[in-house]
Image (cartoon, rainbow, N blue to C red; front, side, top):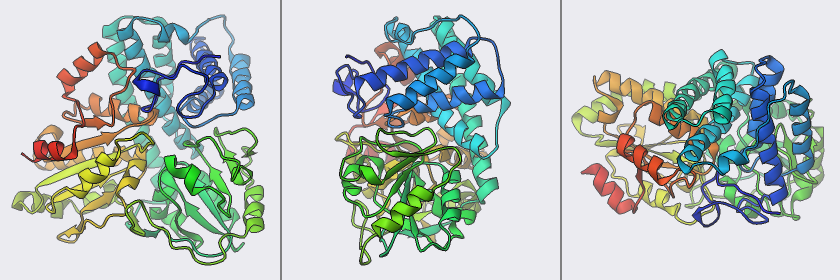
Length: 511
């Protein structure tokens, strides 16, 4: 059975996955079921009925269809059944009509849809903590109705930018949810080494699941280690107060098949990114929330992590302390430089810029991935001059976050701002600096060098475009769902540029 999917960066041949299996490992039947789920969600949104149950179904359903979230056909079928049961109208829609329409219309609708998927992930995390925003919730209905009914390129472009506008609200909502629930992140050093004895590795993005697991494992002789985008958990006061939250295991998501191979501990997946699970560790993989994988134990909404705890005690962990490092050989990662922390250093940064001690600020962040070419980001950061700062966020930082770049007047040159959704922190810092210097963000000595992989990166990019931020360098490749005509428009209006070589890009920026 054939499939069609081009929503992620590593899509086959730079055109789209169309065979029996996608590059991400998703089989065609699973991909087609996710298309069916997307079609059903759009039908539900067009029934002109809004309530809390339907909004939650739409948000969680879109989250299910993000790359590397759900590989389980039965789970997806059950979600489709829930959607159809809630659909009280005869509106019919097939997402294939988007894949097969005029390329520019398809491009704009894809930007909206994939941006919505990313925003759904952020909205989901905020709602888990009890935080909602009426404008965010209402926009899911509005945008899904536009996808089904509008073909004017001019009107679709407006919704593309509005997706970025609403996502900014959504990221601010999640920032507020996380900080009011778990405290404001503070700078924290995190080891990559693993102590002997039972442990659990937690990957994904969900702070609420981490908090529940930490409470349930308290005083049980089990250590907890973050993985991937869970690394920032160490900076939140209400999470770091647990002494058994020990360190970070491994690097970014695309290395999990190697890093989890025969690991003597269970791994809990709270959100994306799960890769096809190898038999060597399938019996110790647990999923929860919207994540599901065939033959792996799923923790339901009651969030009783007893099976994970029992598996940890059964496996026993390593017999001796294990020395482990990041990609570049470092074993200490520093996190916790969210907007409050960096803005507390604003006077030093401003004085450094005025005096010339800080010549430039780079934001190097975004998704990591398996496709060749991402070592560009490692080399770029390694070669940034000693009189520059490097802000980073999301899992792309694992390419270089174990490097020691030194300091400028007590300020670390490498400042980890958190998860992908913490792009809000970077935006807030940039806005405050622009206000101080009485200029626009584009006039600051600030450059954005971004990597993308999946749909959360798409919605962040749309937010940056909505804000009018120019000269973004994007890689490792351009999104194939963006047509030549639409890409030309974005390049001309926002000066988006593909990355070239780290040497040439650094030279261009600094000159």
